Length: 526
Image 1 (cartoon, helix red, strand yellow):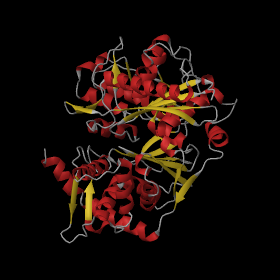
Image 2 (cartoon, helix red, strand yellow):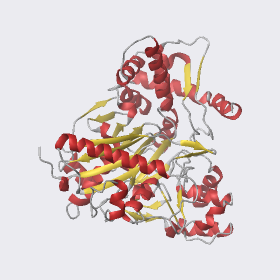
Image 3 (cartoon, helix red, strand yellow):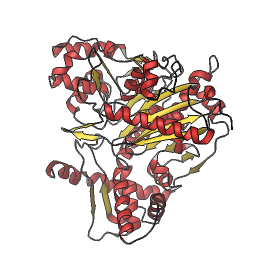
Image 4 (tube, helix red, strand yellow):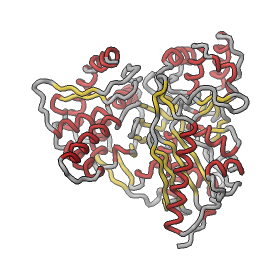
């Protein structure tokens, strides 16, 4: 098969545990992939990735993709139609005027910015979550960290990689909305809040124009620069990849999840469930009031979005499956990891719909929605609980959605937000029908999963790269996705069942009541 690389688009996304590359053809179909496994490190109380690990991971992922293309098409990648990068949103990467990293990368997972978050929320009358970049920057001011006066530029992980590859300090509006509040009428940082922040900083002895320290905001499809010779060598140290390839605006994983599930139009939503979990609902009107549990961000083309984000989702589930895998190995049972997940997850659906008196909190890190600054994975049960494997696994599946459920109840029940469809993607949905069923009952709404959902955010950013070079004049991102990408897409939808919805609600009563034990564990079990 002949491959015209000039018509192909490449997306690379840096997730919490995996860096993934997806190459798509001119029909938007994935034709090659690459990946690299990695983990964050807890260093001096800070969740971080070193920049050395960032580039080693990106290069290894790209090298894996190159090998896949060579094996499938006997072709070397020398050029491409377009490239896009996305990554975990939020966090804090701060550099001086010579592009020197001033402090280790502080990821979204850190919950050390509570005071800054609370003060900015009060002054802006707009929710500023702990993981947002501006909360990190302000917390550094409050703590009088020595590096603050040297900051010439701060950005997200995707923005940093894009800058190193193109020389352009830009960011897609969806990712920028996790740095600083966005005014959806202008598609730029909120001018009033920029002025407010500068005044607040001055009160603490810092003369800054914060807009000048952050990346320029771009909407999907806008010119974001081209791959430089230095950038090409950084991505592909072999020197085979040539400069000049256009890059689309770098985006966050929330935005690429919206694109990958075609959830960028009003009254659509998606849930991304992996190491963390978040739901994104595109709004038709502003929220009636401020809610600390809800973030206001945007689609990659600037529409307002309400986001419910929880730091913890599948990590504890994966740990328990790993324990069962170890047991299987000890007794000589031969079963693949995918099959083991399938057995355990499907069995969970046979358990009691309220989990029979079992409870878990899969908190590896703090959880703002439930008031936890630190996490302690915790499992407990009532003495008379129905302690079965099915109930045990169902409990951990339910618990993975617990914090998200609290935030979504505010959005749907209090704010009466309209929602026509909810699409799921991420690791929780890999075992067909199980995560989808649990999610439908938790949200009391139909949940759809597309056949392409497993491609995830790397495919989403590849689609944004394709939109960059293929869009017609005046063609909006929703129109492009509807007419060019998802026109013939297939998937499955699972509706909630009233008895299981009621069971999940009973579970949530126990979940909320038991949070006192989780908080005590975090405070006392050091």
